Image 1 (tube, rainbow, N blue to C red):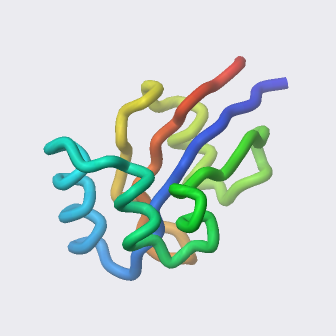
Image 2: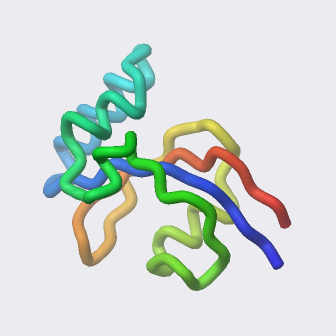
Length: 93
């Protein structure tokens, strides 16, 4: 069965999400940005979501996590919770 590990940053607006993505692309540390900005409890651990399989996260997450290149920030990804930046750190198909 497929499985992946990822980290994310959850914010309320697409605009903030885009700004944070730009900061990370310009060299800011993903984990530090997550700790300072994410509204998800995982922000305290740098946005780490641990290991999970298909169907364990919302469909919008699965679509990105199980197809995006590794270690490349993806987003904004809109879900019912808000706007996310996703970084897939490992994946086994």
